[in-house]
Length: 597
Ligand code: PEP
Ligand code: MG
Image 1 (tube, rainbow, N blue to C red):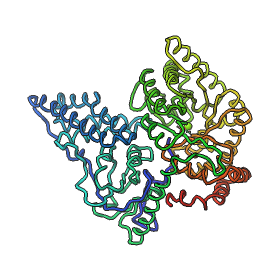
Image 2 (spheres, helix red, strand yellow):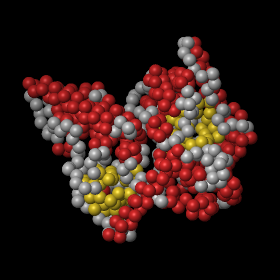
Image 3 (tube, rainbow, N blue to C red):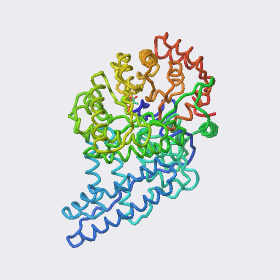
Image 4 (cartoon, rainbow, N blue to C red):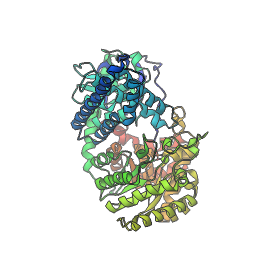
C-alpha cells in the first residue's frame, strides 16, 4: 500500500519559499491562502451540575442527529462521486458510533463535563487508542475520529453545515493541518482551487477526495502552517508535490502555463477513455483496476477498467476488533461483482499483518512484521476465520466472474493448503444448497522472491499469477517499502527486478499460466512499456491511472518494447535500465511524463 514518498517537507535550499510534500491529487492551482483551524481548540470546558446532566446528554443526541443530517446533505451533493460519497457514508456511521456515545455519556454523567468537553475527551481517548496501535493504517485513521468529533462540536455550537473555513472570495487554496472528507466535500461549491495539508499520504482520505473532486492537492507538508499565512499567494503543484509560497511573477506565469497544459492533457486522456486498449500495432492489452473500497468499483468502470485485477479485501477489516461475518463479506463481494460483471473480479484473500490492519487478529508484536505473520501465513494460522472469508468469496462467484488470489505465497505447500481449504469452502457452500460458480480459478501473487525463483512450479499448479512488485521489490532488494529515506533504492528498474519479472513471464508462457501485474510499477508509463516488452499483457493499477497508461501503450508497438526490454535485460544498473527505456520512449511521452500536453 504505502508508496515511495519524497523526503519530509523542508525549505528548498535554493528557494526558501518552496515546500515539499506528497502529490495527493494532480494538477496545478494558483490562489490566495486561507489557513483554516479546527473547532477542537476553542470548545468550552465547563463542569455541569447533576441537574444539568440530562440536558447535556440531550444536546449531544441532538448534535449527533444534526451532524449526521449535514453529512447526508453533503453525501447527496457528491452522489455522483462514489469514492467520496462512500467516505461520507462511513463518517455518518462513525458519528453515530456507540463507542463515542458511551464515552460522552461517561464524561457527562460521571465526570460532569459539558457536552462539548465530553465529545473532545471521548474522541481523544478513542483516537489515542488507535494511535498507539502497531497498525499504521489505523494510526492514520485516528484523524478520522478527530474529524468526527469536530462535526459534532460544530453541531453543538449550532453551526449547521458549518465548515471551518472563513468566507472565501476568489480562487483560494485551503491550508490545514488535515481536512476531513466532509470538509473537502463542503468546498465543492466554494471557490477552492487547491488543498494543502500538513499530514496525509497519497492514500489518505483527503487525497482520495481531492482526486475525486479533481482539485490539486499536496499533502504531508509538515510545516506549512508555520510558513504560510492567510492572504499569501500560493502555488499548489499536485504533480510534483510542491508548494510555492509567495511566488515571483515569473513563477506564477510558469505555473499558469503548466496548469493550462495539464488541464488540456487531462481532457485528452478522458477522451481516450473509450478508445481500445491496444498497442500501436493493435495488440490488445487488458487494463484492470486495483480497488480497496467497494465504491471504487464504479470509479473503475468509469475509468474504462476491464474488470478488477486486485481487490484488496483486507480493507473490510479496518476499524474493527473482530473480523466481518461471512454474510457481511458476501454482501460486499457480491456488490463489487455485480457492478463489474461480465468482467472479472480478482478477490485477493486478506493481506493482513505487516503494515496492514493487524489489530483485528491481535497479531503478536514482532521485530520484523513485514517478515512476520502476514497474509497467507496469518490466514492458514486461523482456518476458521479463513474459511468464512473463502465461503463469502465462493458465494459471490454465483454473481459473476470471480477469481481468488493468494498474497505473499512463498512455497507450494501454502498454495496446496489454500487449495484444500477452498475445496472445503465450496463443499460447505454447496451443502447449504447455495449457488456458486462451477469453476473458481485460484491464483497466486508473485511477490516473495522464493515464489519468483520457483515460478515454473507455481505456473504448473496455480490457475494464474500476478506480479506484486510493491512487495517483490521490497523483499528482493531488502528495502522497507514504507521507508521514505530508502525509497531511492526501491527502483522497479533494478536489473534484479527486471530479471525476476522476465522469469515469471516466461514461466507463464511455457506452462500456459496467465500472468498479470498489480504492483504500482504498472502505473508508471516507462515501467509499463518495459513490462509490455517483457511480455506482460494484463495490467492492474489504481483506476485513475488507467487513461494515462492506455494512452502510453497506444503510442508504442510490441516490437519496439521488446527490443528495449531485450537491451534492458543486458543492463547492469537501475540507472542504465531506466535510461535505456527513457531514451527510447520519453520523447514521444513528453506530455504524459510531464503531466501536461
Ligand atoms: C504488491 O505487493 O505489489 C501488491 C499489489 O500488493 P500490496 O501493495 O497490497 O501489498
Ligand atoms: Mg503485496
